[in-house]
Image 1 (cartoon, helix red, strand yellow):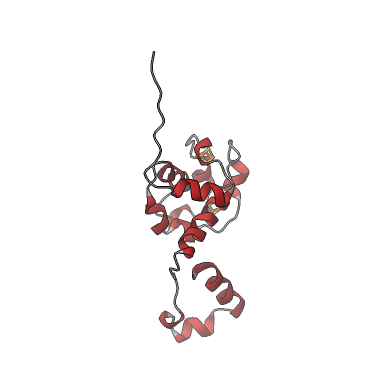
Image 2 (tube, rainbow, N blue to C red; image 1 turned 90 degrees about the vertical axis):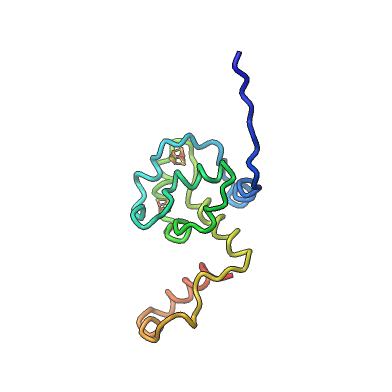
Length: 133
Ligand code: SF4
Ligand code: SF4
């Protein structure tokens, strides 16, 4: 008889993300449907299904991946997932974990005058709310 054992990942990141997002990360069976329908896949360094795979293995590189900031929370993946996993919530949870470390992903001092004048104020405020600790 084959004995199946489960090994807990070295990192507790998957538990933190599961708690913050309310999603069952280990329910994912890696069908890739989320990635195949994501409209922003070309700008991502980890495809959405890979984010889940890395999380399952306790790999914290998801926190430094561009993907979590590129995700526009469009819910296309959540609509299509056969396991009812809401990837947008998982991406949001990963951003929250990141921001709780007080890491700023954008600094006003790094923006050019042209950017500051050209970007609508409401977009700037939304950007800073999303991307700063
Ligand atoms: S669509 Fe759902 S089950 Fe399939 S890889 Fe994505 S999250 Fe996992
Ligand atoms: S919610 Fe994010 S990951 Fe899902 S399809 Fe939209 S952009 Fe892609």
